[in-house]
Image (cartoon, rainbow, N blue to C red):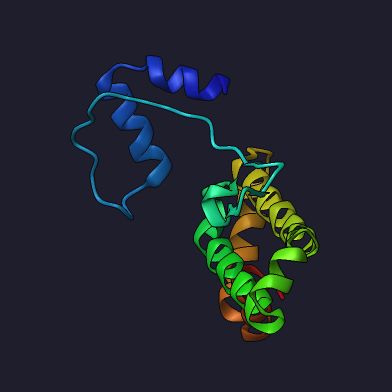
Length: 159
């Protein structure tokens, strides 16, 4: 957070130079900046997901760190699993069994929250040598098909 405050205080030219240094040439040349605004990236979730026939799913149920873009994936998974729950049991039985369904989804989502939180901390840490490790890990993920498929399956489908 201290680093963010320092960046917010920088004059425009210094801020642009800092951005250019961090991003390099891969995104082009930074030439202008508007009003600087910051907000913390954090995860949070509702404790009560089911009340008065209203069921919170996806981003209504939780806010995930956007490092892995999992908010939409988890929302789609929530909708799919809720549909399956209702379809498999019938509406009345599904409603009577809703707490069990929600508890099961929470158990599954807990793992994805942990993974997303760990990814966020790895990408936010500035420990000496971590940049190379991150680069190698991303290279391995993109070039090793079995690893990439397993990661996508876990992050997209929760499996």
